[in-house]
Image (tube, rainbow, N blue to C red; front, side, top):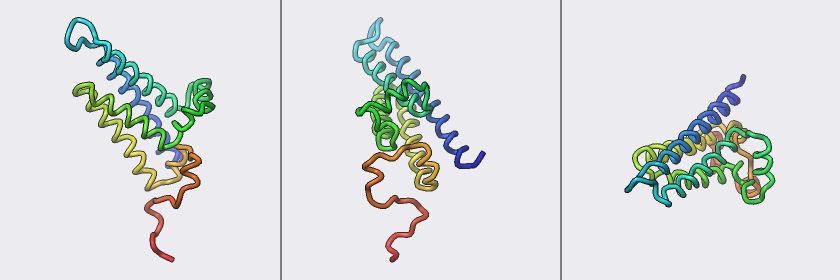
Length: 156
């Protein structure tokens, strides 16, 4: 197995692990009594929203199960989730919700953001691995030059 495939497989596995931990954190926070004997409405709602977003991104990261991925790909609203821009927007939203969930939520929010920034850093250093993980959107493919460390700038 080449190092490029090993790297992309490692990031997919790490992404799946982070999303599963995000789901666990959101569910635990939603059903933990906050100021009374029962969870409050907003805690359950935000925990559920965070869990659904994390589960969707888990499916996108591992590209399974097939019928759900096919449905996500064919939807105009969610087709951007397979691009880096779509993923970091949803990860940012997940992290913002997690930051409101106490110490474990803050930890998971930081880990979620560190993962997406780590993937971007690898994308700068190894663009072929980055392109294997993410699809190019129409905007990204028609935009200007790509910026990675191998290119020289300002030379004619």
